[in-house]
Image (tube, rainbow over all chains, first blue to last red; front, side, top):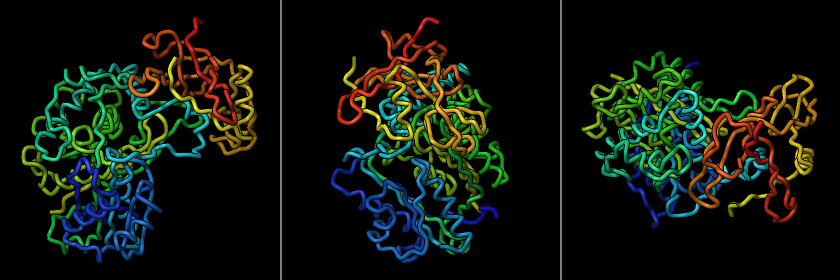
Length: 385
Length: 136
């Protein structure tokens, strides 16, 4: 069984807030749900499947389904960190293809700027051997960047071009947290956070959220929206593997990407627009290589000189400004990657960054800690004519 | 040095031999008699083949830096996080200590330098497997 054309994304909504001191996280989930359903032309009573991850308030889906007032027959709280929501689109398609639901709602929300968020996971088997190390995402991704530079000669200037491209897109997004265009020099002159990553190599931290509505093809064809079909999906995980064969220059996207492209029956060279998870600049560079947009070790040269800027570059990416400049709600950038891909496929991106005739897009992400243990999820989406 | 918190690891029956070894200045890994592979961090069942025929093996406590990143901001900064590739062929996540964190580099030889964790209850002062540059 294949997921090719098994389901469609009918609704997508990104909450406009980036700072929400006077809202609750459940409220943000609800506002995102309402936004995505309105976008699709559906209502809460149409929803029969619900997806959230382990960061959702309370007892996961049980709390949220009751709070939102849903009556569902399928639920899934698969957790894969920030890329979860890309994976949820695929899991929703699986549920729809097997008749378990017809209208799946996926929500994410959080307020990491307004309230303390517990990110440490007690009881993890690696804790005794790693907790004292003080590993944060900065040093985790920093070690990947350092090794990539060591093996392939990748430079800080090349990584900086990824931020520069994101900032060129963010200037056209009125909701972007960092709408100012930056230069390679701006990135290199920003404070060092964790070698070799500077402050501007890092994504923003934002309150906010988003939601998606995934529906059966039959329902999608009855809605007054462009039909955006799932063509293929892949997922994978990667860890230190008991200490054998460590390679910090390759992510789990080296498996999730080919799995998605194979199922879709398309090639990276066919892709018109790419949403690439951008927790840090190095995250983007490694995924571009791992998905096959360029060879391993060639990512630095691929991203340099504005090659990711819409309208001038070879591969327009993250045209909303991405996590690097627009939003990274609840430290989780997966849902905004799907949302911007849907905007591009519908022709609803900001006019200055809209890719002409954008009919094929990829959304890919990393969740967890790239330098330790992480997951990857990739989906290929197509606009039906 | 830094005021960084070094939480004492939870010592349990599955890994007590590891922590006992560090107290004696010895870094131990586990080897599997079923598949012949070693692993770190230590587990009761081999993560490579699933066998429970695992046993403790002393390492030389030496290796080289595979990659590192010096944290420059926040509590206890600066401090160095690294993967060390042990001479026995296993990678391990650890901290590097030394006089000059800026002089640390990939490929540099390092040796075990046990470092006490915080005294804060059970496991008081349990040694942690830090590494430091060495001349060999």
